[in-house]
Length: 269
Image (tube, rainbow, N blue to C red; front, side, top):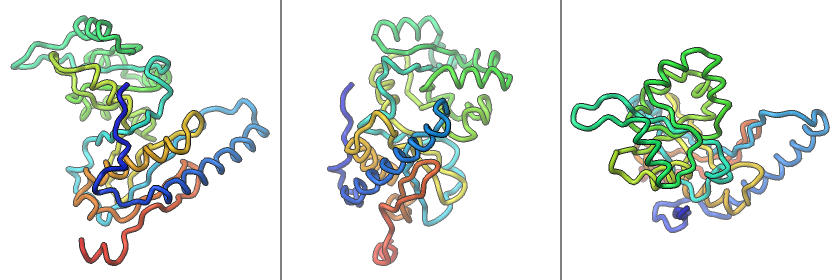
């Protein structure tokens, strides 16, 4: 899989790498101690959230137009082990299209196999609507795969179909990929696998996953934070001018500051 730029050379990067490294190192040390304590109390405990989150605080609440669809944030290091060892589900848009041929399961399956793309299961959008209506079926689907990718054209309606099981805690939101019949599916899916999602909330604070405890080195997480901060600043209203602060945290940890807009920056923006 081709590496993605870590973000170190981005002209708009404003967070010192050393500040990020210190925060990441502190969080990982804290998480290791917490896990040791948890293992002593309950050796078979599971469902622990081991992701590191980049917490974004905006100067102003974003307009509702910014909060309706997720923003794909490319990361240089995937949050998952590898595509080959990660159960992945691909949702395709098989709805009839007025000016193009409908995307069928047979076409998608043949293309996936011919390109050697490690997708565990392909689900048609029509089948998703008909076969996964019950809460139990959504839970089963949620637990069956670690990564969900979906045709960009259906991303906007998936929250209504998959509901709180997928979107309540934003743990397995499907990542949008461009699946044109004549497009480069391999590149799109590889990019999707190495991306995180930013859903701008209706308030001023939002989060995006940037790292994981266990399986990722400190410098890999730092690379991801550098890239994610620059990527987030590119898609939020007013870009860096709209960013008030960035923090890093685990779900159950304190938030460590890595960027705070200063008085001079406030006056410039």
